[in-house]
Amino acid sequence: MEYATYLGSLAIIPIIMVMVSKTEYTDYFMYTIGPATLIYLFYEMGKFSVAERKKLLGALVFIIFSILFWAFFEQSGGSLAIFSANNLHDTVAGVKLDPNGVNNAANSLFVIIFAPILGLLWVWLSKRNKEPNTVIKFGLGFLFLALAFYTFYATRFFADADGMTSLEIFTLAYFIITFGELCLSPIGLSIMTKLSPQPLQGVMMGMWFLASAYGQYVAGILGAGMVSPNDNASLTEKLISYTDGYQQLAIYALVTGIVLIAISPFVRKLMGEVK
Image 1 (tube, rainbow, N blue to C red):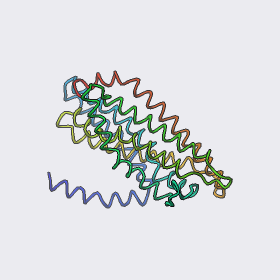
Image 2 (cartoon, rainbow, N blue to C red):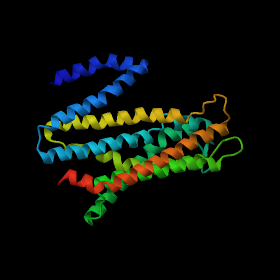
Image 3 (cartoon, one colour):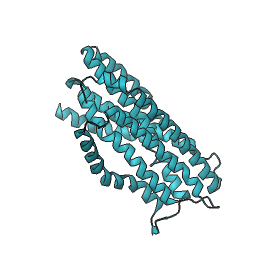
Image 4 (cartoon, rainbow, N blue to C red):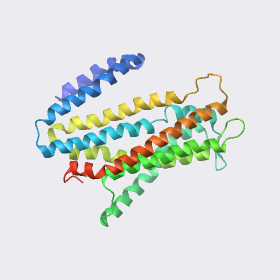
């Protein structure tokens, strides 16, 4: 099985190369693999007890919501990269920085700094029986995401007459979005393992990563929808087009977070004894 894994990984590389070079094949793959995976999962669920099936349904809820999260979150490689290249000044607190460098590095830097701090906060709250459960943390992730995209939207209010706006506000938005990621991403694989019967743990972890792929796929579609249809649009018009899109993403993220928190008691029942 180990050698088959190595050989299969090598054999798939040419197929991946074709999918990258001809994106219509990627579309076919994404349209097919998700439904096929769900059919397989529901088939396998029939082999387990009622309690185990409920836990798998709970894991599926997390997977579905994670697709939405990454669809909103993963704008850094698309619309935010173009926005930062075209519409941002190049100073933060008087320090000259490349806006696209900030776009590429700010989230990673903030994760490195604040992941241990947030982890210690969860431990501190846990000792006092006040730590939010996993579903609430997912909901909080969406609320931070909404606040971050409202902040990206707010950059339009700091723009000059040429359509150039504040890199400081842009960086603040990345600071906020980092906490959304830290509320969701680190616990994803852990909860997949805890909610899955041992024979399906690998499948469920694979579905978690497939959800990330779907999220990034949808993120590209959303980002493309923000582009001004006029190639010769001014920087101000591009600023308005992108920030209008970020406002819409903020609304979607806010509604999704509220819905997730509202259904948290139902999801917690599906999870059974898993904390």
